Image 1 (cartoon, rainbow, N blue to C red):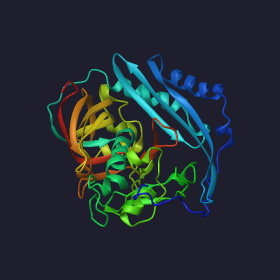
Image 2 (tube, one colour):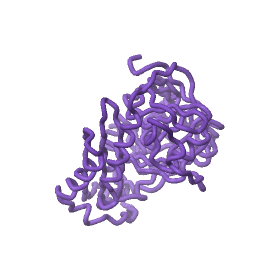
Image 3 (spheres, rainbow, N blue to C red):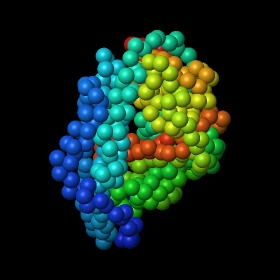
Image 4 (cartoon, rainbow, N blue to C red):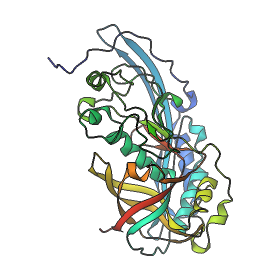
Amino acid sequence: PDPAWPGLAPPVPAPAAPPVDEATAHAEPDQRADRVRAFVAAAGGLTTAGYCRTAYRSSAFANSAGHTAHGRSVEAAMDGIARRDGADGVARRCADRLSDLDGAELGAHAAAKAHAAADPVELPPGRYEVVFEPAAVADLLQNLSWYGFNGKRYAERQSFAEPGADQFDRSVTLVDDPLGASGLPFDAEGTGRRALTLVESGTTRAVAHDRRTAGEAGAESTGHAVAGGATWGPMARNLRLSGAVAGPASAVGRSTTGAAAGAVVDADTAALVAGVRRGLLVTDLWYTRVLDPKSLVVTGLTRNGVWLVEDGTVVRAVRDLRFTESYPRALGPGAVLGLGGRPVRQPDRVDGVWWEAPPVRLASWHFTGGASG
């Protein structure tokens, strides 16, 4: 017997599942291909790669304790790059409805980024103020979820999370909201899923629990059990960084100049860039690896476009950089200089998992060298 196992989920009513879009649930390949075709056409002859996918799940749960649950979920996602002379631009979206994905808009954004990323220059390592676009912020959310707000790592004292402590900037509110989109209403153990506020106005409020970690902590499951949870632990997989209550509007073109025109493709990012005296605009992060789980120090690389910002204007493309940074420190009290007003949902490699965030302006990010080291 396993003394840490708290037993099966009891028979309790599951939350009502959010409605699903039937057109997305039964989308045909030609409908996805239409959006890919529009993306390629909008890229204007640049080399393109990526995907458009739809996912539909109809799931039921039953256990020998008499508990049953059922629900359906749908998702549509698009992720594509455009390439010009080795410079890549990217555009990603995740939505509840395939009809909400505009392949032409995404293709035009990716192409504009690729053109703006041409002829990059080297920058010395050091700490820079940064504006992270939603694709880059998604990596922060993913690692915060896996390593910080994970009930198993919290029980093992491998998490930075301290519920009740002011660990983040007051502008930071993080909510895991599986039912805010077309998600299943129960987890892998049959426990009902609901919105869980992990951070509220900078104060850590909770970590995610399944039945095992909740039993160890003397708490209740938050509905975050995943397949393989005995190894990986419970995780928030639909995490949203709330946007600013009232973000300033800005004309996109005002924040770019010369060859860098096209680096900024939305008003939220333009408004944040306009406040930067000298820093970097970062599109995306990848190859991120955790060096110290307790403080969540992560090393990784930029990709798909980095630009130097001077006096509120994007002036030139920069070669990819390696960074080493504590994610909680970078989002800590006083470290967040601005948030966009409109969170943008980013797809994960796994359907049903997404990360939603506006662009973010941070006071400091530690770049340790070029992409080669």
